[in-house]
Length: 404
Image (cartoon, rainbow, N blue to C red; front, side, top):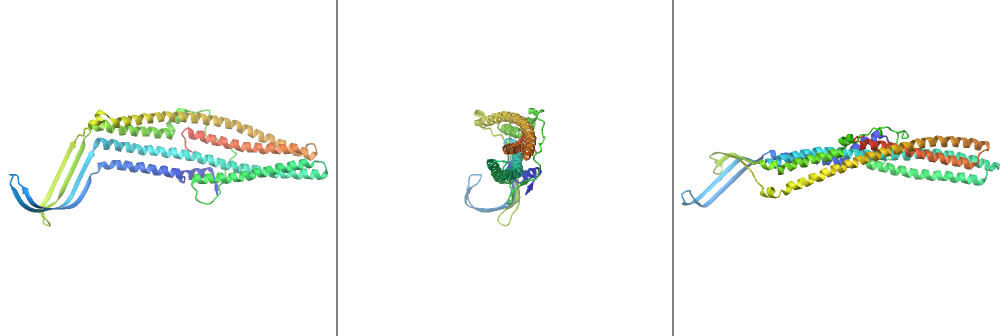
């Protein structure tokens, strides 16, 4: 299955199971917000009531009477109980939790994207190493053929031929290891992207090109604090706690409002004499003395708010460290990249000269073998250097609060 970086990022945003779960948690927060708003809507109770009484009853004057009676009611009852102080602030807190869950989606997306980018570059690096090693194996086979011909002509030793064959076998063993690594890297990326098909991924981008996403010489940590979704999550959560805490302070000053409405035909069985209508509206202030004397719930909110503030400070320190680490990673990777590029040029030229000298009989086979080995190592170092540099660029890009 051919794949490039854009496809990887697209699949990471839609198929990754971690993000699917985060989206489900966002839907849960929205549902909880809707649930918190339900307090505004009264309860409607349509129904039928049949009653009967047979026995002694006392009238208002104190006389006891033997009574038999029945009653019937059919209609609509509407009731509502509004604990304004608690419900209003908890509804606002639930709305804030939806915003918090939205920021959490961005956190998860950034984390998954970075993991996908790193996994993608690891797969591409393994594939590039395979190409380089296969080229080296072909070149090594040519060297073995040349030395074999020289041995037959008596101008080279058999030990030189054996060393050349040993080097060729070493390259073939490394090729086998890299093929296994490619399968593992592909399977890892398939799992991350949640691809159900039985495929092996094939990177089609040219990965030996360094990407430049961030100028590491111009970095603003404060700008990153304003953009990093982790801090947005914590700050939004802090606002939600502060809003919910008001239910234990100013919310206690607001009353509980009761409302009821009853309307329907009323009278004996199956022959109602007329319509019955009644309603009530009331307000009361519930004063929880335990809250006033001890304030346990309010103090619990205070403790949770303080813990959240500490977590914000810890996250700021962590972000600052991540940025500095990624800046150092970019700088070190750039230095290794420049050295590896130069090493490939040196080793390539040395190998070409060695082969020419060998053909002229002025270089021993061991020199050519050593040059071949150095070129392979230089190419593998270059692949690793480019891969690490690109991963560092993406790491710094996301550490600054961006999302690829």
